[in-house]
Length: 85
Image (cartoon, rainbow, N blue to C red; front, top):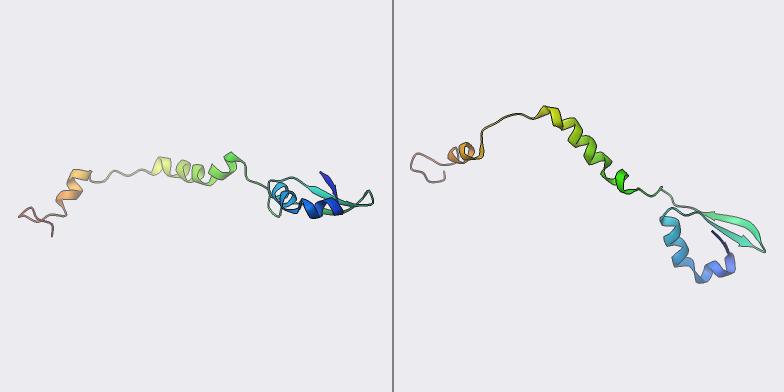
């Protein structure tokens, strides 16, 4: 997108939002490009946001361990008198 510097003053908030979303904005003076506004960091797509979690799930998939079931773990929390202790 190209915008004159004069018009950019009135549209500054919109220009910043568009740049944050990944669009490159070129500011012009007398029809010549003088400044480029671009996002500091590329926007993350839907898959990119979930990639780290997907990697953790995949790495943990083969490492499940069997432990005591929930009923057993609750009985460990109670004494012989069946009271928490």
